[in-house]
Length: 93
Image (tube, rainbow, N blue to C red; front, side, top):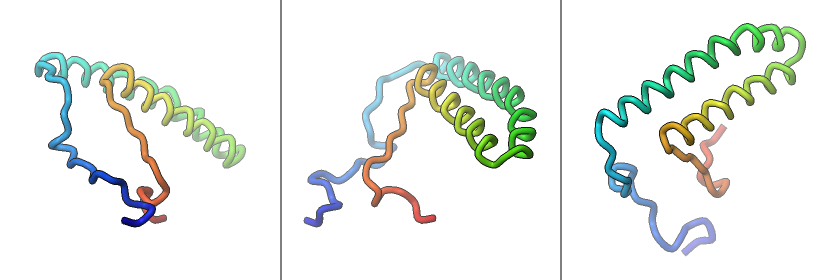
């Protein structure tokens, strides 16, 4: 076994165990997340465009804030976590 392979192979996403949640709860959580996403995207659009005109680093910093906010709301509202372990699991490019 090579150093990049783990002892157990990863499960496909559709076979991973997850808590059973009713469809109305999933719908409400999804709707709440989409509302947060739309609001923060609308609020961040103009500042990001202006910041990108000033400097790339400034604009990229605001984009990182927007991304972290969206991932945080996914974690808090929907219970979704995303973590990539190991450089071999990153996409090329």
